[in-house]
Amino acid sequence: MALVEVLIPTYGRKTGLAVVLTSLLGQTFQDFDITISDQTEEETAYLDSIEIRTLVRALEWHGHHVRLHRHLPRLGLAEQRQYLLLQSRAPYVHYLDDDVVLDPPAMQRMLDVLRGENVGFVGCAATGLGYLDDERPHQQHIEQWQGRVVPEPFASQTIPWERHAVNNAANPLHLERHLAPDGRVVRYKVAWIGGTYHLGLPTTVADRQHNATELFGDLLREYGLEPHLSAAKNSTHPTAHA
Image (tube, rainbow, N blue to C red; front, side, top):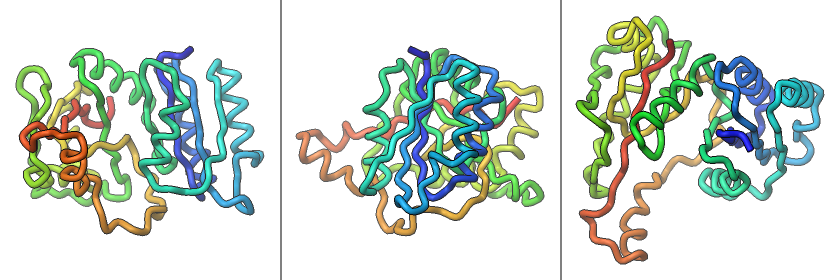
């Protein structure tokens, strides 16, 4: 069993999936296996395409076990990710969407922070390389952690969503240039986390009318919890890449 299981949900993005798998070949960290769950309709499914099969063979040649699943019908983002999680028995999992490309040290950096801070999850901002010339100082307010990372308790109405702007466009790379030109890890407070460079592909989630946090109240009532116990645990979050 590998130390990390890379979990990749995919839908309608053969080229994106090929790019993601190629970037996995270049990771400095190597103790990982891969599970892919495809929800593309049968007539356009691509796990058996020559491009994907070739990359799967290359990854297997380098010692990574790759498992391919067809998981239908589509029941939403959370269900697809839960399905992937149930396939893994590894100590750590790394969710990786089919529209990003990982910088070579990304997995090693995230694992180092995860272990060093003893936290439940860690992320690395998805940077839009098409925005490299779009500097946004007004969105680059960053709340760095002082001391060890700890959970932050929030009621559903008080989550600091304004933090999300720090990960917009190419803000993470611009902040890296200012705060960490030597490649050091910067731990900062986030509202959401993603992963490394974004390919800029069209979204496959057409309906974004609701957010998971809208369910917090229902969950609190179902499990008999008091509102002050609800928590959106922030992660350590390494700024982009060395």
